[in-house]
Length: 218
Image 1: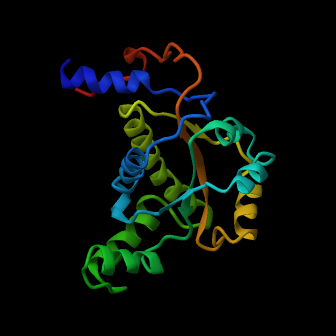
Image 2: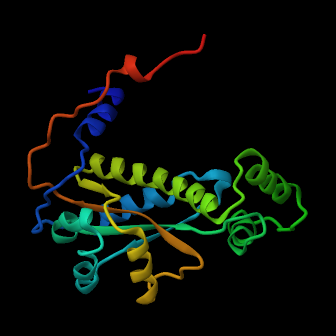
Image 3: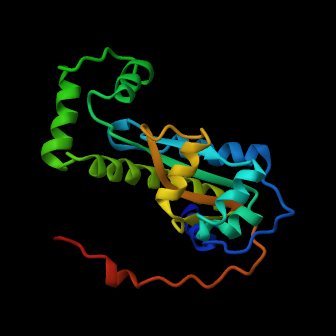
């Protein structure tokens, strides 16, 4: 099998798993590969506005059931259950950007540097990111890149997954904050995702035809 067909077969195999085999667990090595794929994911300006919360505590899984209806199958059967957070109020003068510039990019930070000025201009003038809601939505979009990479990596390892938006966001944010798992001034929930091994047949993948979604500007 050539590489192109191998890649496409991974995508054909991946599906939103509704029923997991709770007796099967992902190995430490495979999980490390999946979460590393998330960590290595690209983000706008490289600022990585995300945090990954692996939920192992059964009490938390139980208490999430009523406020995360779409997560129940994963909470009750997936080997690993992940909540992904998006950073709030990420701007050129935020502490996180200063941290990224100085400690990750390893260059000096300055509020009047060309990089900071360019980033602020991009947010305000190009994408109109001038409100707390717009900034959070923009950051949340970055986290979905990591989601796709983690799910594809899992599928390559013959591990199944289910991306989840079926939850009451306000209630989950409040629950995580009240129990000390999240600083609500810094982060909000973007999505949840379960990883494990299917206990169901892989359904036939149904997608639009390429001609219906793909055009070429000549």
